[in-house]
Length: 607
Image 1 (cartoon, helix red, strand yellow):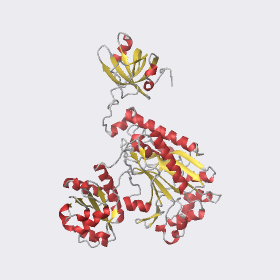
Image 2 (cartoon, rainbow, N blue to C red):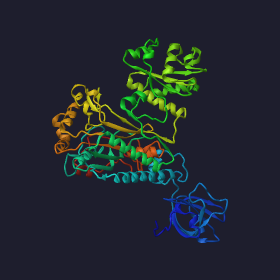
Image 3 (tube, one colour):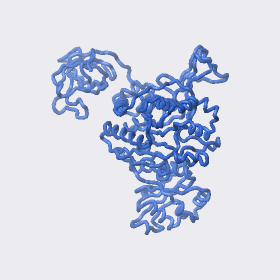
Image 4 (tube, helix red, strand yellow):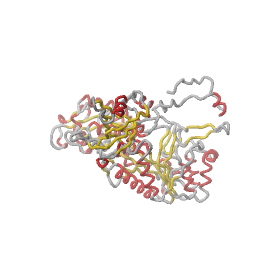
């Protein structure tokens, strides 16, 4: 796009522009002084082009180039020419050409940046966030932000073509705690009352279905006051969707079509498994120990409890007697790992919920049925009988040279530990194909989970999730067996979307509140608007929410969502750039009718 300072963008110049006079403006990416000639790589939003300054051709322009340094902002006028033979740069899109400068203007100098902009070097996270506007100039970060825009643009186009309409929902809503803590906003004009920032537009999108908007979506900003990690921020963005008159199959097909088209359009360099595999929750937990399995590699969990029912090993005896299980994974080629590496794995498993592990390395040659006592290595060798090892190896599908890893504990802890070990072993043994994207659906989740601390049922997803029709009678007799009409979308071991068919009848919703020990008066106070809406012809409906930040992170090949968010927070929910959160004046607090409790210590600076 032409502007008063630019006739072209730096990144668009090609051989077909040879001979054209151009005006460029941007940042000095790199400067090289060869004595009589000065070469500057000029960078703007579109890319980089080489500019040549010669004192013989343009003395004043050469003088400007002599004084500029990295990240100075300049304008250059000149003529596009082909680079001399042998000097082309095949790694640059503009590498066949250069601009012969005729004029140059310094638009703004720059202090020396606190880190290199023109190199992808390691920079401490707080420093990057403190100078985020400089960090975003770096090629990888700039590319990630542009890639995020392309994904959002693709989503809007895809859904609009299928009859969806985008509806913005309020940011200031009522606090109806359903999981994470709300961010609260005091109301100046309503003293003592508070808004909440939405954790999601869940109730609002269901009300839109009651309103007759059958296909809704929104790129929604959401807020949750919870502890942070690599894939979590206090404010995040999700693709929010809701559709009337659908069932689970309709939603899964739509999500598969959307993500297939998205990946094939925006990441044509990767491979995609089609159709997306589907696992029930029970199957996923049994085979992988998690409801968000990474399916790019094998190493499925196998239950070997029955094979060890007569084991003399105390750990196995005590675990099985207490109702626990013993499960195993087989790591191909893992028998080559040494004692130090096994010790590292033992320490690792304790960080992912396990108490320890039992490893068995299979050596020698021939079928595992012919394994001898001298051909398996284990720190617990004297506790394992040969016939037990042979049976475990056969069930795990192990071969000579493989490593079997077993964990004994209660079922939930075993699954958690082996899920972590499975991922760690895949990384150590280089089993992960980074060029492969495997999406899968997890379905048939439990509707409720028992809260031991408070001795009550909690919703596994949220209180508006519909139970399966055939399981509704169990809500009165055996709530723990009720299955939800819920579904998740997983990619390469990350949960990226979750949704469900919703409750749309008041009587079922009230039954759900009763199971959650939400008294009728409390339900009316917190959710009366929903219950009343269900009495005015609410259609059957369902929806899903996709974590946009996490989706972009995965598709961009990053491992932290902060790498795909323009201005993220730290892991302590602070903003080093703006210094947020910050203190406010007494006058502001007084306007909001807020007084800090005596003894509250306010740090001078944001953490």
